[in-house]
Amino acid sequence: VVTLVESGGNSVEAGGSLTLSCSVSSNTYTRLIMGWFRQAPGKLREGVAVIDADGSVAYAESVKDRFTISKDTVKNILYLQMYNLKPEDTAMYYCAADPFLALTPSQALNSRGDFGYWGQGTQVTVSS
Image 1 (cartoon, rainbow, N blue to C red):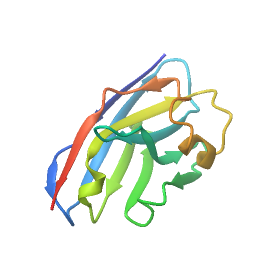
Image 2: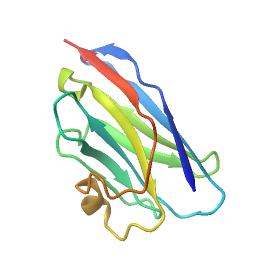
Image 3: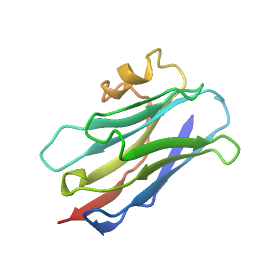
Image 4: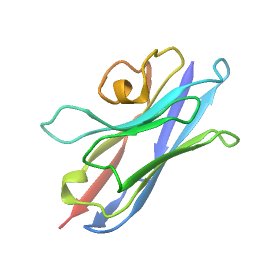
């Protein structure tokens, strides 16, 4: 079992920054592919950034050069640093993880629902 708990969501003005955190706990798996997904009202969930067990990453085109995904393997925390936020970044952000997903980070970014474990989400609201 993998338990994920997100935090760090907030309301910010356009151009601002936020860092989301996802606390990852598992007493079974040590190698996980993990990612951040988001879903805005009325829209499908979309991949934002993915990092695999070896540290390879992939980003959605809409966030490339503005967002950075990273992980602290000692503290077992997944991060999403977000800079130059735009109103279109407004969404519920979810952390996801899977110990068996045999996909590259780019493939996993577009998988939407293939991850086996999900957090409860944290809201990011960007005002213009």
